[in-house]
Image 1 (cartoon, rainbow over the protein chains, first blue to last red):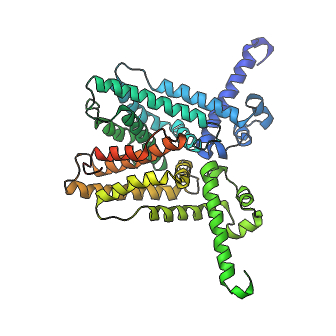
Image 2: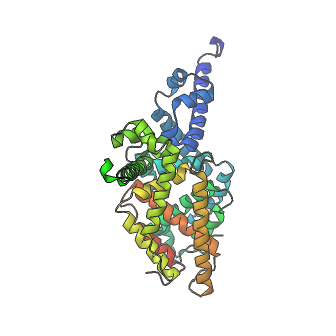
Image 3: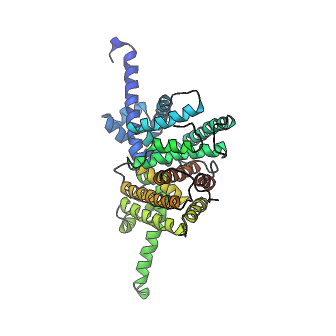
Length: 200
Length: 200
């Protein structure tokens, strides 16, 4: 902050302000959506001037990009890498329960992905790429599991992948609308168990 | 319109303006969300002044209410009532393909339901009631089908209901993000067939 701390001070301060702005962005984009959010409201939340915030994030879109990067970072952190595909799906189910405790990212995913179905939304391509990647990874996992005789379903791996991602998204929507209306983890496990007998 | 047409004219004109405003509301709420939409933009789309539009819809919320009523009316129209529960689920699957041809209501459902997860969204209670009702109806259908020996699954009817609604919502999200990425009807049929053997 002062000359004494050298370059560390200003950089540390910048990082701190950016982190606070990203948290405020996650909160406002989750509740008002990207479309309903403004940098002005985010600056107010932070007790900053709009000009002060724009020094770090010149546009709402630049804040969105930072929010999505942070989201990816936290999502990767939350899902431990695991040996077998069955373990990976077990981890996914467990992570869904865990994320209900701090539903910020779940809300963000739900609201932004829906808004982003519009072709002119700034996160449109981000979500197109994200879903293509998720489907691709799940398809490959199911393909290998089918080869290894771990699936009881004759459906194509790509079908199972699209259905699994749909079930997870749809259950989260129902839970976000009314906490307690559905058990996201239990229903995801039941869905997986219909074609992976080893799932608990 | 003139004295000659008596009361029919003005009423017919009002109905026509309201219908046009509702269509414009469906389009803008679908793309920008309720949060991102303004009556000013809707008035511009209609070639009206804001004051003129507010004569029919004093607030954005009053237009939202009318849009949701219209949505319910069209949804009810699109889904023919049918004798057996199996027929009803067949109809649901067929309707999903049909609605891809005019995806306006699908987009509206996707964007508004996600926005409405926020407790202070004006459609929050509407979507809470809607999902509780859908889950209740599907649960009752599966309960009767289980009794009649038409299900191959030992899962609770309420679980199957939550999963089915989730699959349908989630597949629509994937399709809206990228047309052609998933086959909504085919995957919904596959999902249903895992526990209703009679589904085609």
